Length: 289
Image 1 (cartoon, one colour):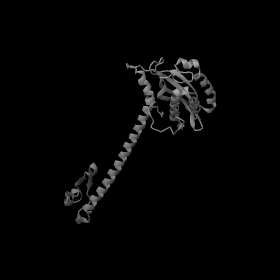
Image 2: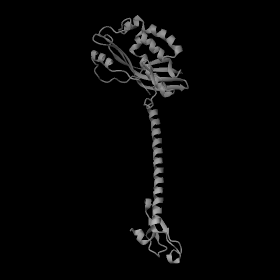
Image 3: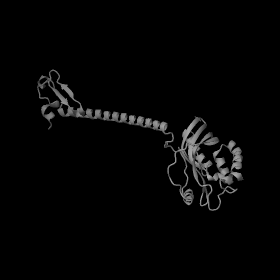
Image 4: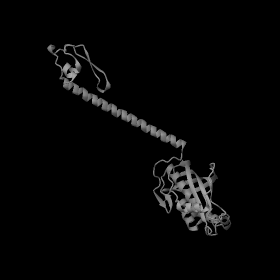
């Protein structure tokens, strides 16, 4: 039997009607005073100590439970707000941070398609289109037409196709970069043209139209022994004008500017055969915001 059971409710000695008793249940100190005429002999009947203590324990547990739930909700809410604030700060400080949402739903040939109808989807589309338009496949007539049809808006693709054919089929241009008249590399050499986006940002977004800038590095040249146009790296920013057409983003126009260009590190260039092997062994990516 506990001390409270021996001394009455809360530890009072019978007859000490003005004494106070204390409970530390739940970490609180509760005071209780006897009512006037509290002696059993004066008609006052005390409740059984065990029932009263059980009541206090039940009330205490409920209070603690409510407090725990309130604290958890407060902590969870604070954590949620903190996470949102952190995400917002990250987005402001680093606009190329991944969002975690899957914006790419499928492919149109070898080019990603089915982008989300929002800023995130527009950035993903622009990044993937920068890769396609900067690839070595643009120097192949059939593949160039497939890429043009997949990337450009229908009303733009036809006109742009003619212009691209003139540029990529020009004997003087191809000769200047070391390619044969049909756009292929000379025997023993590997032609490399690869764009590698490092970030994208929305310049403008209004409903079904968007302007997105893509910053990327580009590898371009001929790899192999005796190459007169070895593979080199350059940096550009392409700004794509996009329009939402038939459930996807399409290019209506784009402009290109140099840079920003980082400072190069003191690294020795790889041998020609190593560079040629690398472009064949390392595949590209589907870019998603």
